[in-house]
Amino acid sequence: MFISIGDLKSSIYKRIVMLKKQGYEINEWEEKLNAVPDSYDALIAFAHTMNGEIKIRADFPYNEPDGLENIKELRPEEHKDFIQSYISETEIKDKVYGGVAGRMVGCILGKPLDVVQ
Figure (cartoon, rainbow, N blue to C red):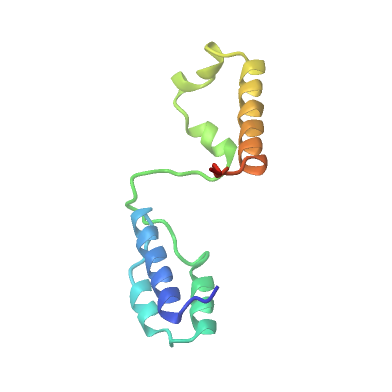
């Protein structure tokens, strides 16, 4: 599949807009993108420089941790072990395994059938 330089530049621009909505500091990145030459190599190199360079704004009101332990630390005390009061650990595992197995059966084995008349 062929992607044009304009489409690639548009995709990078959309990524910058999304990062802004997610609380990242993207002050000059739109201008930097406009200054990149119309070349696949230059646009891809620019996209790679964005990784790790763009930081969360200091005034962003949300804390979005990456790791499970950090997520658990931020949970309010009244929500810790909340689900265990309603469902046993065995039942949770059964539901997760059943959901994954059902998804695999539906996606891998299932296929649309046309009715032949």
